[in-house]
Picture 1 (cartoon, rainbow, N blue to C red):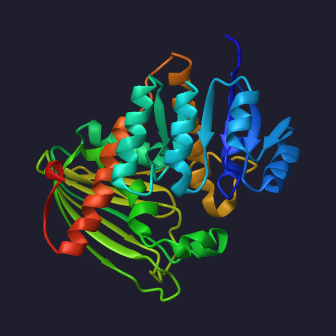
Picture 2 (cartoon, rainbow, N blue to C red):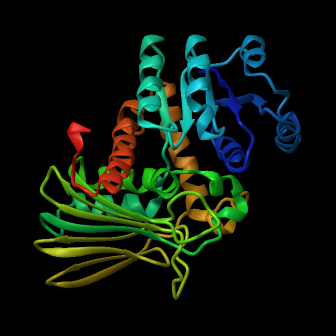
Length: 342
């Protein structure tokens, strides 16, 4: 099988890790980079010996023979770049959040279906090793029927230092972190039936909310509390770990800090270390996230090569996007939202 040639669209903060994550895999060739400020693309190209850089996406797509594109640009550009690539007949991978709004996300899915091209969303939190191990424990039925869960991402990490553009988002934590946390909830427990959300803005230097608490009743009957904060002052900083507690009628699963998975039944507690693999190019502050990028890319690449089914398709992620905007609606209206009616 010949290598699949692709281009990266957008060379900001995350491209510095998405690119080397791709290069960990076999069967691909990164042919070109696009960025509206071409100097950023040139720096990345020099670092990883990529031959071509562009500041015009149309010229790139006309010049290069590609098998897919990976869109890593600002969220406001996702819909437009997806439409352009879809019209060229190219499979598309797009970073989360999928779009700046629910309507735009639905249009992206529709555009790709109209052009008969696959759309994948790079949703990597479900690919974190600790989260995969939680899923394995849950599916083993060792704690019986799960009836209650808490999924927590509460941190004091200075995220705005690396990504200052996040300060300007009118909708922040539910789109930025909520996209990940809702996807984890869906990955572990299936779809939500209803939700109720409350938000706060604690940091006066940002435009959006930096705290959100969402209570969901899942279709299985399980009660799930998803909590998110970038305003927390923790005793020990958990970033970038997602902490999990799942209660079943025969035991409890806990994913705590320091990558520790605990499974408690009437027979006692089993403790397992689920530390992720470390890559030399990974930032130590984002080690867990950067490791999961490789696994997410591998899953999508298998689908592109016809060797498997990708978990994070546009159709699937649209359900996560719906939860994000249903949560905003719930907070604005101060009411419970029936998810299928949103």
